[in-house]
Structure formats: C-alpha cells, structure tokens
Length: 412
Ligand code: PMT
Figure 1 (spheres, rainbow, N blue to C red):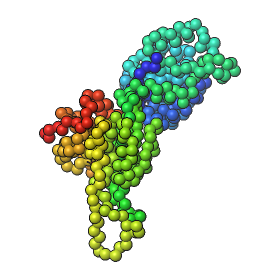
Figure 2 (figure 1 turned 30 degrees about the horizontal axis):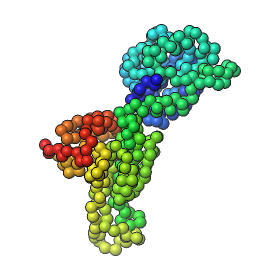
Figure 3 (figure 1 turned 135 degrees about the vertical axis):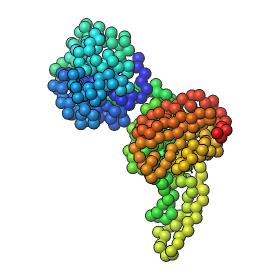
C-alpha cells in the first residue's frame, strides 16, 4: 500500500552508488517542475557516478554528502535536514543502502537522516537482478516494507551489466507519477476547486484599457497549493505572464465579463470557489471602436458597475464553499468583515495592498476571517502562504455545514 503523504513540497532526495544515479538528474528536474524543493544528499559511492555539481545546478541547492562537513553542518545540521523534509526519497537505492537502512545504521549522512526523520521514506531500488533476488536483499526489503518504507519498483528489463531481469530503477516519470497518486490522500482530495486569479482589463478603445497591479502570483500559488492538496483545479486567469502550474486546467480571459462567464461555466460541479482575482469594480460604459483622439484638454469617462462574480457565486442555489479575497489600503479587518457579510462568504482572506505590498510581490501576509473566527498568516513567500491558506480552507470546508447561503456573521 502506498504510504499516504500530504503533498510533499520539500523532498530530500538520497542518491546512492549505482549507474542509475544518472537518472536522478532527470528526477530532480521533474520534481522541481512540479514545484517541489529538492535537497540532494549523496552517499560517497554516488559521487563516483555523478558529480555533486550536477545535482547542485539542477536542484539550486548545495548537495550534502558528508556527515562531518563542518560548514554544511553549521548551515543546516543533519537533524534539521531530517526535520525539513516532507518526504525522503532514495533513488537509486543500492543493495548496500537497503541493507544499512534495514540494520538501522547511522554510518553516513543519508542513513543517519533516515533514522532521524519523521517523514515517510520511499526507496527506488536499483541493482543487478541476482543481487535483487538474493535472500539477504529480500529479507532487508521485507523488513523495510514492514516498517512502512514505501518501495517503488524495481523495473524489469535490460541492465547496465548486460543481463536482463528485475532490478532497474523505476523511470523518473513513473516515480513522479507515484508521488501524484499518493497526493490523492491530500486534504482536498476528490474535490473540484475553481480559482480566479490576476487582473482584468476593461477596454476603452482598441489600444487602451483600465486595469490594476495584480500579477496573478497569489492566485497561481493558491491554485498550485490546492492541486498539491489533491484537488482538481480549474484556474480562471486574467492577463498575466505566468506559466501554468502543472496538472491543472487553465482558462484565460481578459475582461470582468469574460471572467464572470468563465467562472460560471466551470462552477457547476465545483466544491470550492476562491476569488483571488483583482476584478474590475467598474467598466467603461462603451468601448470606442477606434483609438480615442487627443482633441480636448479634458476627457470624461463613463463607467458602470461590473457584475460581482464572487457575490453571484455565493448566491447560487447550489453554492460551492465560497472564499473571497479583500484587497484593502486601510481599515483592513473592518472592510474585509463587511465583504464577508455582504457577499455571504464562508471565508475571506484580507491583505493590505499598496505599491509596495501584496501586488506583484513574491511575498504576502493574509488575515483570514470567517463567521466566528480569525487567523493571521504572517509575511512569507506566496507559495508557503498559499499552502497554509489552503490547509485552513480545507479545515473550514470540512467544518462548515453545506447550506444554500451561509449564516450571516455579526459585524464585530
Ligand atoms: O496577483 P498578485 O500580484 O499576486 O496580488 C495578489 C492580490 C493582491 C491581487 C490578491 O491577494 C487579492 O487581494 N485579490 C483580490 C483583489 C480584489 O479585487 O479585492 P476586492 O477587495 O476589490 O474584492 C473583493 C472580492 O470580490 C475579491 O475576491 C474579488 O475577486 C471579488 N470581486 C470583485 C469585483 C468583482 N467585479 N467581482 C468579484 O468577484
């Protein structure tokens, strides 16, 4: 049975000595593409097959290999490393490493980390077919799986030694696939989450529009975090220059009206809606068919209210759990509570915005408010913040009784 893991974002990748170590370079690349942080730890034997520099370049972090490396120990000691990991993945795992792990040895950094971590341990064995079939290896594998270590593979096929049989390391793509499958045990597993992100553009003429400073970074981080929690995610995005996080469906729109239509087109079977987009409150009454000319000193624009997507979703007869954002420059909590009440939301995430905060920044802070509760999430990277936010959304989703319209909370 696969060990359930909650979206491992911090993966400690152990690489042991074997020709399959070259495949681990591809594995690091793929894991990072999925948004994981990867810390590589190599055994002495592994460094003889592939240089640590290769993994340092691919992972973006210095590789750890020495138990007695003073500089590295000062930076992040082996116990800290063991605590840091959400998952310890050893690929390739040699016969010798499996034996040492089964015996509970602490004779190098990787083995010590495995003893000291509370994170799940997964191993992808790679060795000659006869070594794999040897009674000693079989006994070690049985001991390890009996303790909850997850076995990935090995694959069957032609081996580097020229023989054919079981013992090949599972392909990196298959290992990543196994991780995704295990994430199905996440806090939002089985749920459909629709998220809106980014700005909208309201055209004035063929070349000009009214918009705002939203980059989409917050909403995209929330979408990735919801995916990592096991949700099926539909991301409705205004015009941004961000790559689509892997594994989710993205619908691109420009205007508030298009975003309204796209959200309502996707919301039918949604369990949760999160409105992280900075949608226009007002849109030009008409859009000139040709470029507006500079003919007078003063130009008056006529704007009318844009439909409120969030309020319209929460008013649906079969409403999803509805989460709004509040972007405020002042009186953050008071204004956010007002929106929570007026728009009949289950939860609102308030952020203080300005030219130097929230919009188009890598970090943010959120005040989460819901009927009868509040939680402050301090300033941190939007990726980390989104993970904490999604954990709270999942908690509130589970604890909120499903009803047509959520109870209106009292203003405090
Ligand atoms: O994209 P980034 O650069 O990372 O910046 C992130 C962010 C600051 C844009 C984000 O964290 C945020 O606060 N998003 C909501 C911005 C906003 O429009 O807030 P608001 O207080 O004006 O609107 C309240 C809520 O109503 C929001 O959930 C908004 O999506 C929704 N709304 C507003 C107007 C409208 N016509 N339809 C809506 O659904």
